[in-house]
Structure formats: structure tokens, C-alpha cells
Length: 109
Image (cartoon, rainbow, N blue to C red; front, side, top):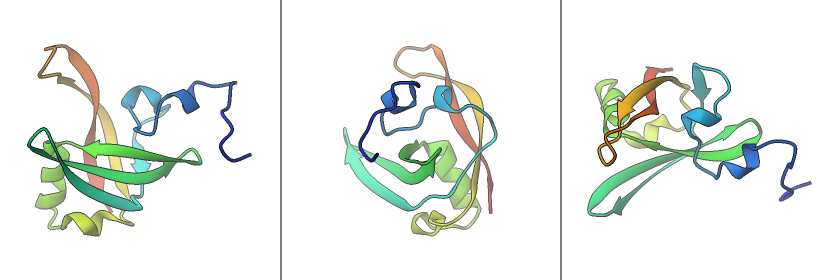
């Protein structure tokens, strides 16, 4: 039933943004259905929309992942419909200085 929350899992409580801790198995392969760029705190942000485990999700693309796309010679809008493969890596959170999980784009098909 659409709009119903599955109380047998935490998946529906994760929010619309997919986080590495919510991915059961890597590599993660997704096919973007949309891409949106917007300004937040005077900084350009880029999100992609895709389906994961039957639910619509979003992922914010960081500068490193955007560089991978750019180096592949692909303009942002052209990632729609491409198969993107991500691995999980550890990065330093610039605010807290803690090591956190993140997505690293490793392949575009």
C-alpha cells in the first residue's frame, strides 16, 4: 500500500537521502532518473534521484564524485540513465573531524 510505513524494518525511517550505512551490499549500482543543482549556504549542491530497493531515494554528489563525472567527459544532465557504481570509503567530516562513511563513484556505464 503506497504511503504505508514498514514497521518491520528501519529502511523507511532513513529519510529520502540514501546513506552508506543504509546500503546492505557494496558495490552500489544505481541508475539516476533525475539530477538537480541548487545553492545552499552560498555553495552549489548537486543531487541525483534514483530507485533503491523499490523506493525513490536521493544522493548528494560531492565534489570528488562530480570530478569523476566531469573527467569521464559527461555533462551533468547526461548522468540520467547511466549506470553509476559506488564503493564505500572513509572520509574526514570537515566540521567534526571524525572519520565517516561516504560514497565514491568508481564506474560509469
